[in-house]
Image (cartoon, rainbow, N blue to C red):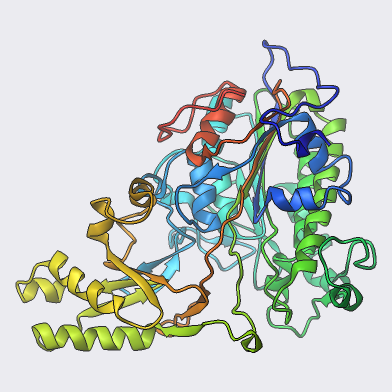
Length: 523
């Protein structure tokens, strides 16, 4: 296979004809895939279909690795890709942020001024501080163009739809309907028809996720015991998290693809004056709703099923508006290497870091130094927030108190490092201090940020938030660009994630998002 070659530029045997310079694509399809790893595509080469990932990678440009600078969650990474700007500029550091004034976390896109359609979620893109790629596509069309986004989760859907998009839609956690926010004015017929005529709630009892080929024979790198055991997941009506577990499964990806095909048909995407845009959010992250500590078989199957989903999408595009009038880009988003600790029988070093215990001990330490009071106001996702009001009342220096707190936390079991926001802003943290600084949103970051030892679990037992299992690791998040006259090629050097939006903008011949500071990749 051409795309599996080791050279820096690998060309297909018969490159597609370039789009004439006088024409622009009439449709751009952006696909963001959480957990997409090119190494897995290489591993599954023999099982991939000819019309899915292979087609895109053989006929398009492949960037081997997108460089996000530091570890980001999929929501922050999606925002960087679509704005061309880091969290310190675009305002999106994570899916959830902490509100010290209310002592609780909230969705970064929460907006009490907007109601939900088919959902109780109240969200909008107002927290995105800059323009997005979708905004620029819509503005370029001056009205008649159509810009939509579909994802299982609301955050990625809204980020991909942007401020000016016609609509962003997601699967609601509670009722399984395709949902949106009243911020967007469009509710396409295809969305309404599916919600009323074929709601997921009425179909979910009949949906199951088993190996694509019936058995796991032929799946690479699986032990005989795993192959023989197989897997079978159902989503019965008496299960509390049935919609959540469905959304992050391979069957959830299929639901998104079904909806995308219907949306392209009913909205006649790519057949209007100007450029239409459809953005899709998929997941290949390790499946968490399983008792299997290493769901490798499920991950392999999810790759193969998504490959078939992409093949279906490309077949729809082939018919209308046609491959010569379409630009497709596929980008990988970072995903957790593992979501759970290894089994105790392996006797690997491990432990639990309790946020409640750490907060209590830190508060007692600061009281011993500076007197009674509630010195720690909150904790969220390895971030400690200090009581600035109390510090000022005691006429203390906030950076000095931060440094004292960080020094104390560093000595706690399970903590490999603790640094302050002052360290970050002074570029004194990490192997790439500049990347750490630009990927930090001062508006939302705590006073002290922790790094937890690999193998340890950080338990958020203060606000019953999610626990985080720490494992050091890296994965390659690739980018594939196909269409718009892009020649088949391979770029092996990492490409800064901030260059993706300008690159797509250049191919579409529209302006880049307004906060994009880096130039495009010349494909």
